Length: 366
Image (cartoon, rainbow, N blue to C red; front, top):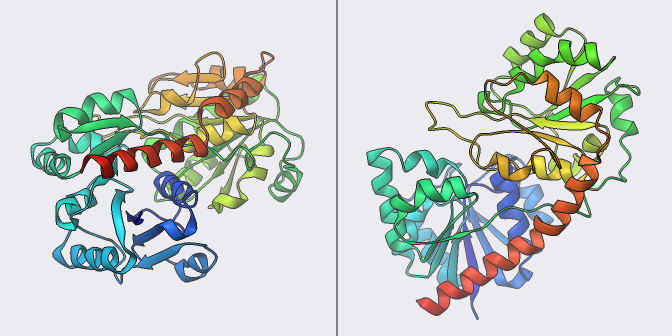
């Protein structure tokens, strides 16, 4: 058999859910069986040097489905004897599929949902669907939105969690000391600081949470364009109740989950529903770490929580204080049940096995 060529813009050391998805799948293939073609990123040489498989970085910082990128991908196919392709994100790089001449699987992560709702981008999805064997989706809601646009075979492919890395017995004391949290109750939120994630709602809820749970703190991990504004909001409406830890490498996240008593990412739809949450791997990581989880109702986010069992769901107009208080004072074992669910349904090994089967089917059906 030939090698798998992975074509993607989303690969570490860049941080994000799609980057984690692609990397965790890539590293589970035998090292001689996979080649990653991706764009440049800060710190990429140091990161790539530690990997057991080949990563080829394009000179550009963003791969686009241009004739030049297609030619470089074809050269890699020839050099490394590749016989199938996985597009780590379906749009827009899936447009390369027909020009590469190999069976291909493309994975939709959420932004394809709004592409499917606009005439111009919907036509591009239709072209991708005509060129790949299968498009994978994260959630049933996403499947309903994208299937009419792609018009090709679809299959569910969800992310997973490394349950040996994210687990309840990690020591979080160093994180608590570093951020002056002491033994106070802590709600953790991990994500990019963008409007969709709902950090502003968490900050506004904290005074009411603290009245019910004395000393409660909100610990926010991540960076992004809303950082400055969110710090100002915290100083105005929740002084002394919010700690911003800044960006943290994915490998260094387990102690942050361990330092928390509950996790929250109340994602909401934006731009009239065009911008939604793909899923929310961080919510699954938190559950694997034994935390009860508050998730929003945007996109595939509800799939990460069994409402009332492993955590709670909150709509875009809900007051977040009551569910946060409920999670911080939970006596029903939501965190323990969430860990069991992740071990049962959301592991990277299951995801990799599913992707491998889809790629094998694509090669057979060619």
